[in-house]
Length: 176
Image 1: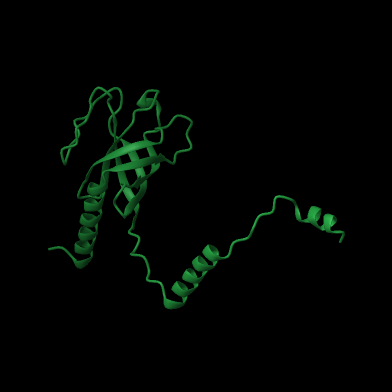
Image 2: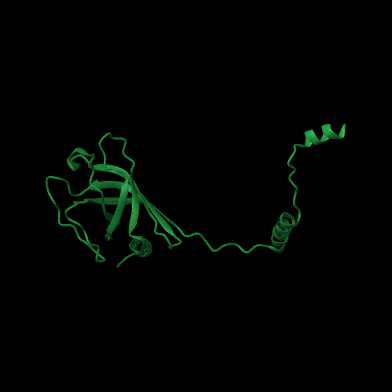
């Protein structure tokens, strides 16, 4: 039997899983200070397992993956045009496959993987998850609407004429 805390955690995990699957693509930032590291790139979420690990694919670095730091801090920013919310996930990332061996990784939701490009499979332990859904625009109060409309009217009706000669030249001509 599960406790209330575990049930709440499961609901939160299901919610985050659903949102990540809806967005699917993220920008992965390697927060490592090492000289040779996985480059910042676009990542594709593969799955979020029951333990709260995020599995994703990212671009292979120019050098051998085995030369890169195998465990490193990372941040993923999930965003998709046309969808109002975004998700940021950070935690400890671990490279699952490298140049010496290929691991058969689970592919969910019909994501096609081009094996010729051999993306790198990474498993992240999600430590911090931030879900941001900007609310609807606040309604403007009457005073704000009045001031906004007054400013628009004022800027449309009051026009300053531009003179071809500078004001000082006109003053000198008039003898002042």
